[in-house]
Image 1 (cartoon, rainbow, N blue to C red):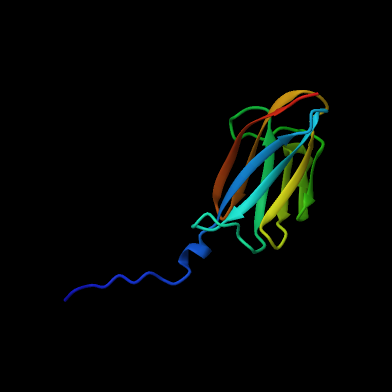
Image 2: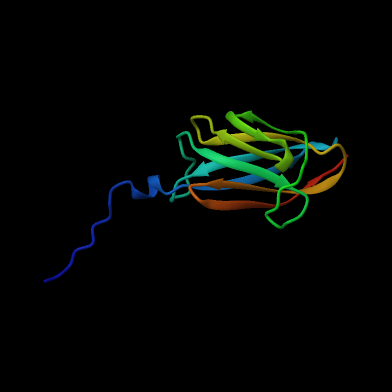
Length: 127
């Protein structure tokens, strides 16, 4: 008896991952954009809940940094001691956070969704 494998229609739309992109505003501030994507790489047009945090070292750590707020999406919780936000994205799956570093420096950002952690890499902030 042969076994037939049938792909579920739209399965890739239910696999979510996040991309993180940092931007420098050249005045000690910057922004972080978190975008939910489906398995096919398309922007996900749905609300997602993500935990987003920043740190000063590439170690998945969280630092007590101030000046980290979400401007797109709905903030459900802010943990200043860990520079951490719990945010529901807007309907296009987008979260935008403002970062006020208070001067030049390098930051790292992470976002966790559905048990997976995604990293930004180095974000250089200039003054």
